Amino acid sequence: MFGNLTIAFILFAITGSAMADGYLHPVVMTGVTEMADTAELHFDPAPKDTGTLVILGDHTKTPKQSYAFVYSVPTPRGEADPPVNLDFSGKQKLTILCDPRSDNCMSTGYVTLGAATFSMLWKVTQR
Image (cartoon, rainbow, N blue to C red; front, side):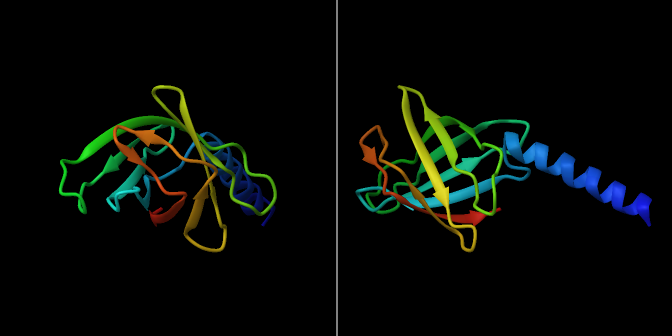
């Protein structure tokens, strides 16, 4: 019995330390640009700390655009999901906070890439 608890604790500790550096699985969040095009944030799983912002151009009928970013997920404290910090080239930064009881997220500001500015609301569509 004690051995099973020890193994479970070790697996939990390993999983928690991997989460501190990024997501264990690919994660996708969707949002909308100011021109009503769908925007998707694709987060690569750990150990990578990279991702891609994809603007689909579905409303404006423009070609799809992609922008690379680097992200970090600090070690969680308490029950709240940790903020996700995104760094785009050109020194633009975005922090996303998610509701731990739903798939809704909100960014703390705006980012403009190319001609697109992004809304503050994001929804987790793949975990």
